[in-house]
Length: 235
Ligand code: PGA
Image 1: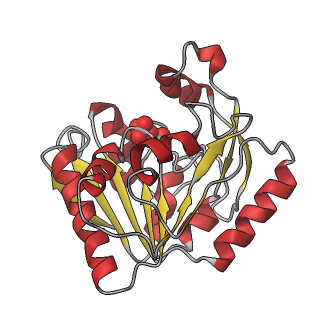
Image 2: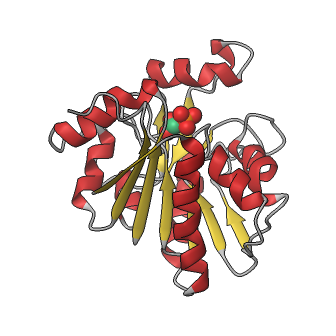
Image 3: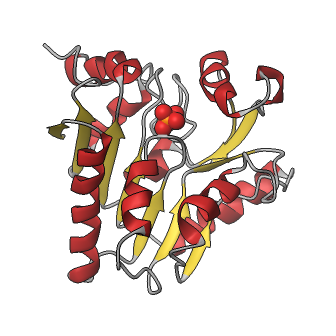
């Protein structure tokens, strides 16, 4: 894993932006894997304000809450439209459909989309518990897209976006760790002091299902972009 420490999320976004721009320029970026949450917001803002053209690029997202349809303002479909797609349309954009309560059908369909559109570059954040996508601690490194139960820590962390903790969905459809590892290139961003412990464990502890992000050490092309606060516990 390559580690880049930046001053703040604006500087981090710029590093990610340059990698995406290069991929578009040299035609190696046909399928872009996207993430939601606070972390990629600065990157999406830079992209929105740029002249980058994604009309020939396909996007696939990591995950979606089960039970929220695309019109719900906390669905990831809604987030992506607001933060990126309304301004930068892609050739096609895929997210799991949270409104489809038939988990097996939905996850099988999503894996088929991913196998037909292999990811060239996947953007990731990291949870305070080390999750990537909604692959919580204990997730198998071979896992594929499936319905997952969110941990109390994740529900707590995400409750800031909902009226109350009880409104946070308890389940999500998430690409698996195995699915994510198939991406040709991966960039993980981590900002803020609340990510410092997960980042310390990522760099200073071994590979273990207790820390889902540690699976990335088994991948040949991962860049971890962290701000000074998230790097503050690194020795
Ligand atoms: P955040 O979430 O970007 O909102 O901090 C990251 C994650 O949980 O993967």
